[in-house]
Length: 101
Image 1 (spheres, helix red, strand yellow):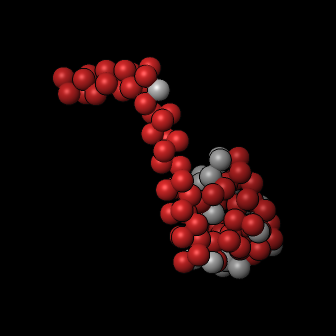
Image 2: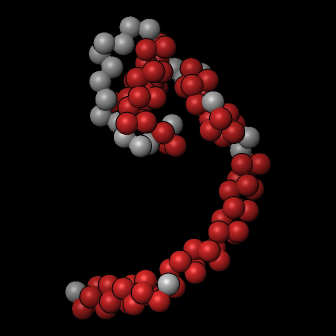
Image 3: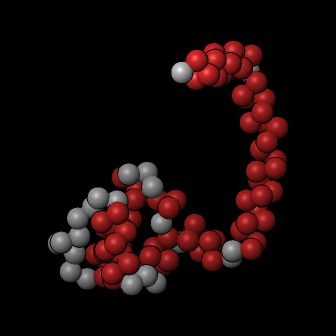
């Protein structure tokens, strides 16, 4: 408990001094390089980012239903696969989790 209080105190001091912002600014170039390298190693991710609908259309019906359920969505009224794709996009967008699908 004492350690948590001390860490919170240090965090507040660091925020006041702008240390967090400085660290973020310094880390940004390295983070960009890491993400670019990751993208080169996994080219399929580009399709997911630039055209999520096409990526979702390539998934199985059971996979789409699984992800809708994981987002606590309801797909009982979805008749066609395209309905499931639309519902998953809707659920992920509304719950701000589009990047995970």
